[in-house]
Image 1 (spheres, rainbow, N blue to C red):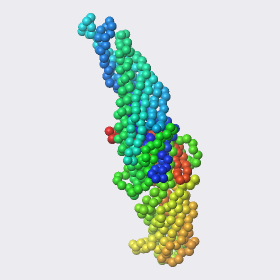
Image 2 (image 1 turned 90 degrees about the horizontal axis):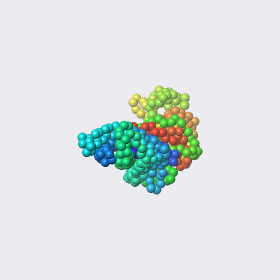
Image 3 (image 1 turned 90 degrees about the vertical axis):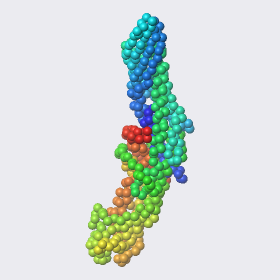
Length: 491
């Protein structure tokens, strides 16, 4: 089994995480038996692609042939041409992850040549030609496990092997006695060469894959401020029908270099459901992940915005407000404005059985620009009740905020008292045309789902299961370019 085959198998397992722990792991994914079968099929197909055209070591032997003499026979360019698999399975349990291929057949080609010398023909005779070999009832298996090592995964090879069943040889040319020599003297050597070649690829692939696992990031930078902790928590849990891991999933201060994210567009079929139809993977994000984001950005003073450009730029001029707030226009006629918006406390976020509820408290300050000076003229406090519909864009969980209701009060004013209907009208306009669209643009950045490069979600469904939001999805394999590239890097 090649380096990239082992990578493909185990790296896909890295998608998975275990049930939520309220102390450590807040993002979880479970690979179901359907997902494991998907991984197994990819593993087998990629393994065949890597083993086919493999050339086995040359085999040579001297044998005594009755009535002929001593023959020195050499088999060279022994090449595996194709492999067909009749059955396979993957099992998980306390002993590890077991992958078995049984009843496989392989076709080989080879070149042969011999030299015979005897007392009758002292100068010797020689001949050469080709042959084909069919290997039947081949069994291949390996057992591995994954352990947590400081937030990354350590791969351990527990057992492996390859056993060859029956071999049949077809000669192209050559003397009649040579066929029997090949069957009697070389049959075991050819079978052993096939077994050794497959076993060697398993041995070579596991250390390389383990090196690759160590390169997986523990944090992913989301923007200039925040990073998502994607380190693994606890050891993987293997059951008889799934593989489970845990990921920390909390927000923290960004440190170091941005880890690039690769996005491949999967299926556009995204549905929202509370059903539980079988899917390959089930990702669960605890509401504490969202609360972690809320608390982090608030503490980092990142929930403050000064808006001086809008799609409808006329809203940022006092002339647009002269009928609603005449004293503003009277005191500052035709002056440009800026909206200074700051969230006054960490937004409260809670997952419901229909959507995600959010309560946001903001201070809205209107600044007037006059003669190069910024003049704060009024401050309105707003308590917003909103809902957020979860969406999946590429490999990120995003959302779209919808305003449910809001309440306001005048905190202070330098342009006189404002009536409640004026405050409500002003706030409604700002929320609907400015703040909510702006927040939605930020929410589109999303939270990365733990899906590795080379894979994409397919026919994903969003599930609201308080206190978590889930993504139930099948997965498509987009090719192994990324895996091959990184294997070359770590080799």
